[in-house]
Structure formats: C-alpha cells, structure tokens
Length: 154
Image 1: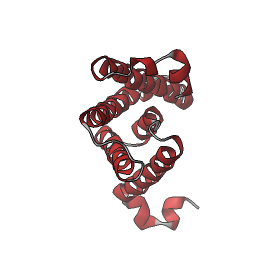
Image 2: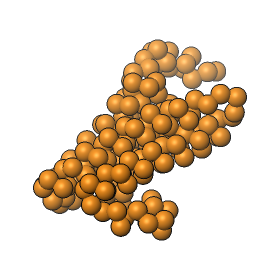
Image 3: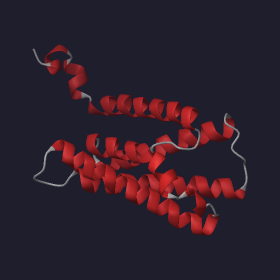
Image 4: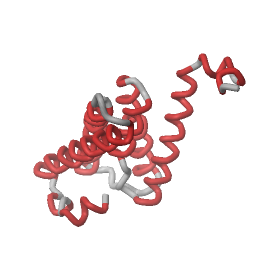
C-alpha cells in the first residue's frame, strides 16, 4: 500500500511537507551552529534544499536558516553586535543564497544519476559560497581564514 493511500490528505498538501522539511533543516542548522559556532554548513543545506524544493522555496530556505543562525549567534552565542560582525553576517546570507542557486543549477544537470547531480550541486554550492566569502574578506578582513587547511575542514 502506498504512503499516499495511507495518508491521502497529507499527500495532497505539499506545502506542509515543505514546512516540515524546512523545520528539520532549521533544527539541523541550530544543532550545527551550537556545535560548530560560526561554521554552519550552508553549502550542504543549499544542495539539500535545491534538490528537494522548487527554486523559489529553495532560495527562501537558506534565508530562514540564516536568520535562525544569526539570531542564535547574537542572542545566545555572544556574537559582537558591531559593524564588522553585521557585515559578515550579511555576506554569509548573500553567499548562502547564491550557493543555493548554484546548487540548483548543478543538481539539475541532465542525463546523469541522482548522486552525481548531488555531488555536482554540492561542489558548485561550496565553490560559490567559499568564493563569495573570500571576496568579502578582501573588504571586511579575514583573508587568513581561507587557507586550504581551514577551508578543507569546513
């Protein structure tokens, strides 16, 4: 028996499914933010949302994850509330959205299987995300945080 036959109302309500999925991703982001402080895996969230949601929802998802991440950082983890910190927060948000668009492009490559598309989407998201943060570091400071060793750990 198919899942839709067991839960016919749930099968017709895609937005609820997306809401539950987004809530799960936000909880995962909260856990990663608490565990890894400011190293939330936005590239991974980008490929997960790009592969499972339509593009408008996929782009909205990292915004929600970013907002929760920033709220946690400023309200609970003691991020300094100054111009530099706010600018970096903005750069991270922009990079997360751009990474999602890149992941969507990579995840929709035709004529290859699911896992290669996800891998391509993840690589695209990671390159765009880290690349934009590197560019931001030239204006905001912190280029020393983009060594191969540090980026490899991310």
